[in-house]
Amino acid sequence: MSWSLSIGTVAGTVVRIHLTFLLFLAWIFAASYASGGAGAAWSSTLFLVLLFGCVLLHEFGHIFTARYFGVATPYVTLLPIGGVAQLERIPEEPGQEFLIAIAGPLVNVAIALLLMLFAGASLQSGAAAAVENGQISLVDRLAAVNLFLALFNMIPAFPMDGGRVLRALLATRMGYVRATGIAAAIGQFTAFALGFIGLLYNPILIFIAIFVYLAASSEAHMVSLRAVSRGVPVSHAMMTQFATLSPEAHVDEAVQTLLATSQGEFPVVDGAGKPVGVLGRGDIIRAIRTIGPDARVADATPVEMPVIGHRKCLEDAFKLLQDKQAPAIGVTDAAGRLVGLVTSETISEMMMLQDALPGTGRRGPWGRPAGV
Image (tube, rainbow, N blue to C red; front, side, top):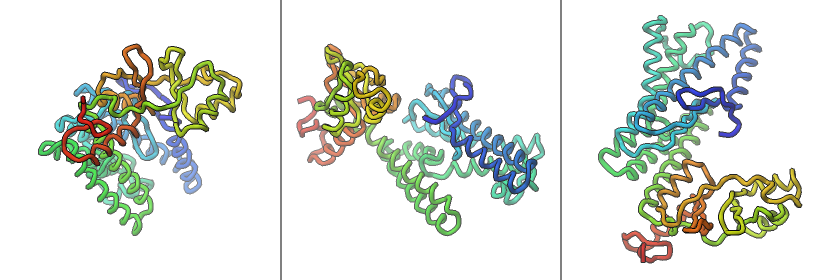
């Protein structure tokens, strides 16, 4: 995630802090200092640091459970709104997803219980809603907020853990795609409810509602894309007409190609037609500003473009798109020459064509049965 600083590695997972989180800490310190002096400022900052330490433990509950099932987690990022663990993949086995999702809230419950048993914390009424109240002890506020985090994360809406728990439970009785659709619909309804409550009581809930609605829609869309890609040759969803750039071409030529096409990403291929990288629209604009129009495309430092063989399945290309977070996947022939591009948009278009075509059989991009 961009704008993040790595602060260390825990059990093979890189821990990152987003710059907005540091700005949030500074804002809390300044606001508390203005209202209550240095003592209040340091107390509020300490509480916030401990709170996000609990959030980090929550995320590592997910991480260690996922690792037990063979799912790697390259990094976890702390944001002002919480933590985000980047799982390599989401297991489609309902039992595994259930355990991975429930692990985070259970960590928060365990922290609250430990604070009550060993630190003498008590659950005071309203402690979670008054975390800035210095009259309530630090451990009491931490215990209350951890229980609140556990309950909040169990809201049955993506991307909260409750949405994934709900999908796992539904998937035990129906297909994964259908379970995702139902869970996403419930999540969108929950978002509308949060937005309505936000209009009446707290405007912050409106922003949470928008985030939940978009996340639920995105989850359903991604699962549908993954499902439609199974067993389909990658050639059925690849773009074959696209502009390429030569490493030896001038940046000015890349600009002219950018203006002449509607592409956003431009593969850079050598004289043999083999991909050596990819330049995005932003990279080209940045290059003409920094190194000038007479510099070579190679000097603009094209980023590596993941490639896949033309005989592979579309599902493999889709996994590469997700794992590498790449805008496009190059498709190469037996000689390694670039013959096509696969993007999320091309897979979406193939899915729309399949939905529009009559009949229930799997079909190729122009209405032919696949393999004909």
